[in-house]
Length: 228
Image 1 (cartoon, one colour):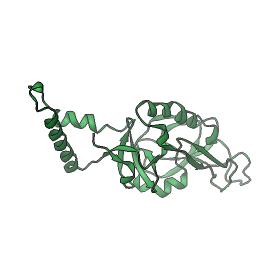
Image 2: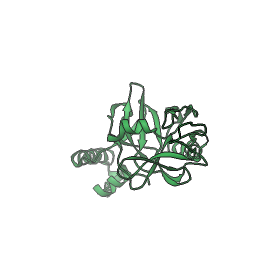
Image 3: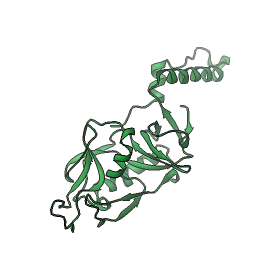
Image 4: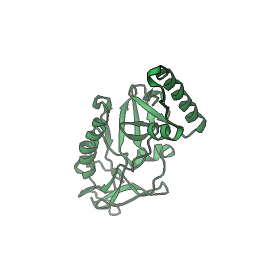
């Protein structure tokens, strides 16, 4: 599979790494913020809407992180993400949290929504609707968090609901990734490059009778489907 440095991709571009498909949201010279193309799991937010103690944080920075490393992602290529846990009314009771893998906040979702593919179910954001000591009568309850629904609009609901999880990561711009394109001409050109390389490597008599992958076989192997 063709590889490029992550920093050469643009916002909205998709890429595969460690068996998962991600979308670039924004980038700087040193780092790239990205989000999973689709859900990696469906689960409840947690006992409350406090990301710092949530079941989602435990899963993403435990089992999911381990799976990325096991599938070839160098953990040193992950840059800790700083999550602003400001509540709907601006309250900062939860402060900020820094971890390796997180969720987008409501503000980030609004900023980057044009690049994020719609999903076939609701999915969680990290932003709390309210916090335990909120004084606003219209914003209360520490068990309600923000989410994105199927048409891309923001909403909120109980943290006990099992909704989709789309990890957000900040990765080093120097990370080698496999770009994914829906442009048929680009994909076909990539397949032709594969045929040329295969011929160069298998032209000696010791490989007599061997044949390269047909297009469908090659595509399935080099352009993995999004993770559910």
